Image (cartoon, rainbow, N blue to C red; front, top):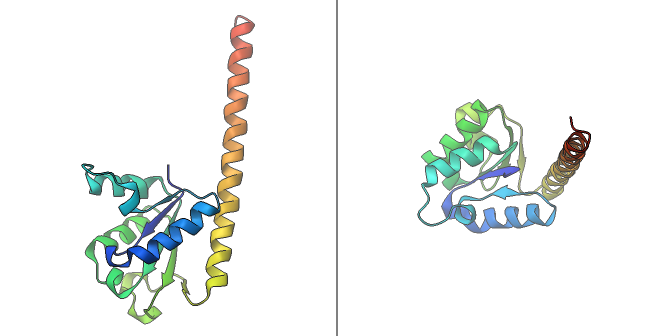
Length: 152
């Protein structure tokens, strides 16, 4: 299950891969269409499912992404799904974003320390969530073993 959905134009694949690689290094499982969708898979279904499962969406707002209907559908899905949307301005100004997303706080790619900080905070949350999930799963396994051994 992906933690972060990266929304980008395929024309900006190199930039998207840099974000993905940095996230992976920090223990985050990102969804990047060109890597996560296998040949023969219905890509729309994969994108919708990954977007549904992800808690965060990184929107790499480039001129190509802002002009992409597919990217705009992803961002609409993120807003409708109440995902935490992080808009990264990459060669566009805030005023060049689609009208319906201009009220979302964005960070400029030039402010890398802010982006790094956000990714690190997400990584901390992901690690904490996985630790808690592990404790719960472990507790359930112990409880199940106890119940079986006690005849309950």
